[in-house]
Length: 328
Ligand SMILES: *Cc1c(COP(=O)(O)O)cnc(C)c1O
Image 1 (cartoon, protein in one colour):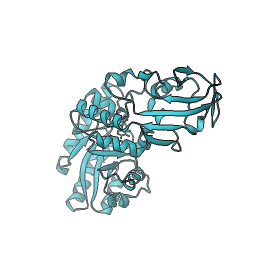
Image 2: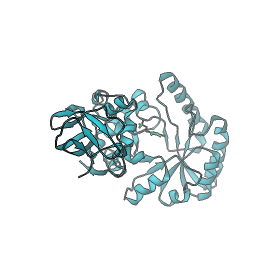
Image 3: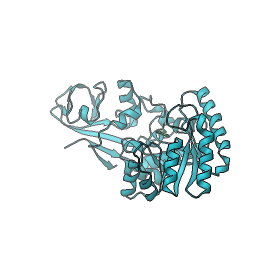
Image 4: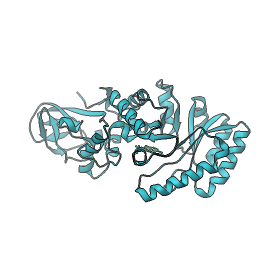
């Protein structure tokens, strides 16, 4: 018996619907990092059931894996190493986010790739720097006119760093959209979960963490923020216990021993942990819930995050890919 992750595809679908209705727009749903730990394919299924018009991942490899697994929806990947395979993206009908003139030239060489220009609007990472906007837009226009590619989207990433910085980025993004008007892109997207909840701008929302019922601010120990938004946690992590030995340790994704696990209706502390297992404060047998829903008295990703001094995103994305994922 091993640790198990059960991912609630229906909960993801319902969260996506809820976020779409809050945004008042269609949505690109982010399923990077193995679907925020839920399993990329299960996350993709939930997102599509919830009405996502496109799925997004960080790199082309993740997108190709979704295609091979049978996902037929529009896909977008925006983070590319120098060796990223744009031709494979074109062949698999994957849209590519472009963050520099160099990437744009590589996209143009493929012929017929669909491109989302990704502008840096103040975050200062992975986006076309302001000084290059004009050159990239002019070159994109030339390549598009020559039939070498199509600019289908304009995008940027809102940090959610606080309202003043966000306002600045929103203004910058509006400038990018107007500078790129002649490209006649179909969609514009800026807001991830926090930005969508704060004040939606752009023609599509592009959220991840909220789709999984997790608090977009990352610090919601009791699950109340997500609960107030009527988002449902979608991940349940359990592991077997024998004689107080829990089959879960650091190599599975454990970050701290400071959160008690739930067995039956008892919360039992973790006394010590190693790579492969942990010892509990009682010689019990059964199944321990490590991550579940606060409503049921189960520990949450937010509770682990608070105890470990990090955000819920890190808790769920650290869960080892070796753990079996199953639909709930
Ligand atoms: C991860 C990511 C998102 C989703 O952000 P959430 O805060 O999880 O909603 C959106 N856009 C980009 C570029 C990202 O890297």
